[in-house]
Length: 480
Image (tube, rainbow, N blue to C red; front, side, top):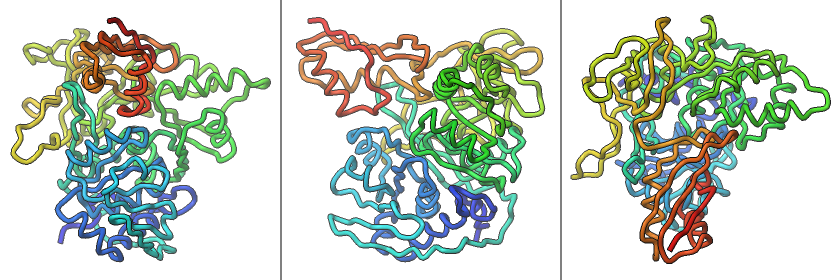
């Protein structure tokens, strides 16, 4: 039998990390108990993947453990019903771990496990028939094994991304790649068991899941979850609970700064030692403004789903470089190569950011009998990110733009061709073009230009029913 600690959730259970005041191992134990006590769930997952549709919460760990070591599709709570149905069909999902509030978005015939009361109980619903399962997880789980196991090469998670050609692709991440990435984040951020992280990003977003959740827990630290980000409430939690680490995207830091600046008596954030920003390009003026207001450096990082989240960061213990993505994670290689010839470029010359190492994904979900989908290319073991950058003489990487057709909004990737494909299905639409427009708070707004026999309201309602909340157009222009 392979080492149990080669699986991500069981590796978590071997530590003493706490999440929302309870041992993380207790939530892992709840997931394992759920499988032991629910034969219908085991049958539903036999030979199929699991889905996790949950807000940022400890129940996410229960769901990961109950996925039985197979690939768990991390589904965004902001996704629309059609997007979720597509992922269920494309990934071959047998059952979805979710909550009562989110379950209504799933297709009616979906087998679901409701984890509203985790780790105490769960409710399994099969073809409309519900059965409650007592999880009996009042004690943490104790496991023995190699605490430094490099991790299994089996699937751990699938995250849908890279909709550059019109449809999202499911990137496959192994237990090994996620464990490697989390441990690299621990070293890069100098995390210890004394850390207290506030997890305010969606756990369906690998940056939030790995850096704000898994890495602190693997370090034996504390995590407090915030299912829905609110800047004023986040600052209250930080101050009242002694939070030492915050991980966010640029728009979150901007929102918190706006709250701080509007207070009658602006205050410093005294407990935090580490602030990490990723998910979208970080403007130098935002970094400087944050440090001026709080007295804390804002350290930028970089990564993507296909690199199991982070691969570059401004490493703790090294001077923070304003405007730079950082240096490679320990054990990860990052090169700048000519986007046309793939030849290495000299320092200071713009080229494509390429990544090599254990953190690189295993490929995309491929339907049986189908050709591999066209997403990001892995060439000679190097992942071609589709992002442009330069390497400075000191080894730091700076972002210089995009090759791939996408932009970011509130830290989420927006793919114009995905929006165009969805809107083109609306009756009366003859032509559609989606583009970005700079937004000082959200990074970018979404502008959609439509030609056809439709109205602005027609397009807006169509998008509301079919696209995630963060993909909704800001401006819709219609011409006959």
